[in-house]
Length: 285
Image 1 (cartoon, rainbow, N blue to C red):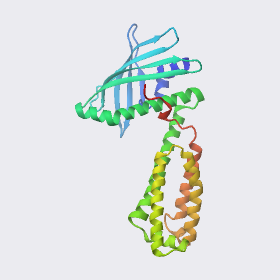
Image 2: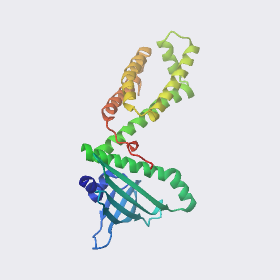
Image 3: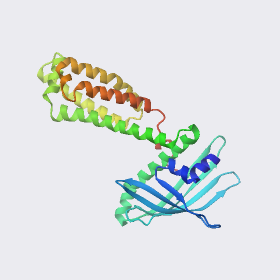
């Protein structure tokens, strides 16, 4: 309980794991008054949202549960949040601690702000809250620092979106949209098929690559996809060289392209364990 309390109530520790805040600074506290603090959230392109907050109360119950209530807001006009309140509740159980949060806020920009909040911002901030809680949990239970977890998390998803793009692009543009002559000729050289059959086969392969690309976004067990690619990329490289040996002399040729993707698959495979996830937290009452 003390570790959890310190990790959430100490600004220098809180800002490490909470994705919603870039920095948190406690102001000098006056006796019998709430603890005031300032926070800042970087939103990219050199912009940030700075706001104020106060810890309006904390309670230690007889069952050793604790509650910390917050009042927060910002005067910056670019912020979707105008003012809000929330709480954290720490409830000890037999072999664990249940850490709960609930918060709500008023928005800026009238009806447009409410619609933007409902369909975009609120789901995003809820996801960031759940992901941050999972990072905190892993930090306290396993000793893995938040910075290391976030590096692993964002690297994992950059690799995921890269492979999604590569497979969809390779299936859509050169095979379905353009039907590049080299795709057809390599297929015809590799297999004993007619020109018409080679064209149909290229179309089928293109559709399969697009489907595999979307599987990268939808399938949760990315490590299995990486294992498949560790087999696929050497086979695709060998097939391309056998079908068109001269292709290895071309710029951005199949050899260098597939070797790059093969190495990225190896990196992704070793990084794909113990990735923090918003799905680890219960999001509804």
